[in-house]
Length: 316
Image 1 (spheres, rainbow, N blue to C red):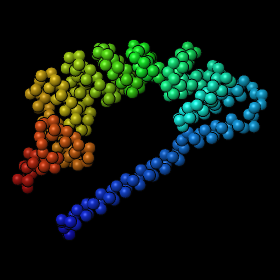
Image 2 (image 1 turned 90 degrees about the vertical axis):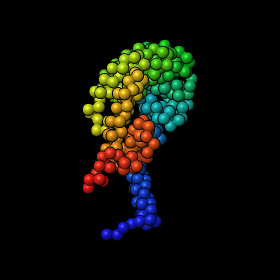
Image 3 (image 1 turned 120 degrees about the vertical axis):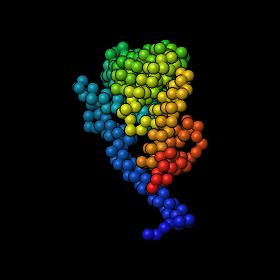
């Protein structure tokens, strides 16, 4: 067996690190190539739609069905042009689509989206109002209206639109915006109610669980905040970060002894995780646990000098 020491060990480590980086770069390049083949981007769609619009039937008298089809192509190209940052071209296509089919919901929605992207807020609001009045049901129209209202300093109108979007098609990002706007206005109970509703409807996403824990703390409902953590802990393979959060809740409630016990458990679990698998994620988790426990030791020395490791070395 050849022992690698000193400079040779450093060189071997460096070569291994370089090989790992090159493998990662190769994987990223392969994935990027596959993604570009699978999704060529808006420019290719624009070319395809332009060929359809400039085809043999362009400029000829057409049936109502053909006009509807053409309006659909213009709407799609208007969307693609916006994604390609050609906002004025997008507006032209969408105006042409609405000239052919004035009640086409998709064209009305996309025109509002393009106006919002241009920050032509008054026109965008008017367009979204027309879309909703005509029976349009896209949650995105409400989200865009809410964004405009927030920008203009109209929080109540923004909250109404966020609530409408959540009712139509709830998603985590929109719910977080609604909840955090409520919280910024000091309406903690409203924020908690909206967060709890979204949390249940979206099958308990982690980001809403964390937000709800914070809100329950602010409302002085420590046991409710702890319950949100406790119901999750048994399902987690790595519990240390959630134990640290539990310690923060206990500390804020003046239950310092319990908090210290929780931090110690988090540290023991993080050390155990690094001993089993020394991944970057596990090592970062241990670093957080060490910091929370007030220990300055680095990860390697923490593992080396942990009680279990010392016991193993003294009892071979």
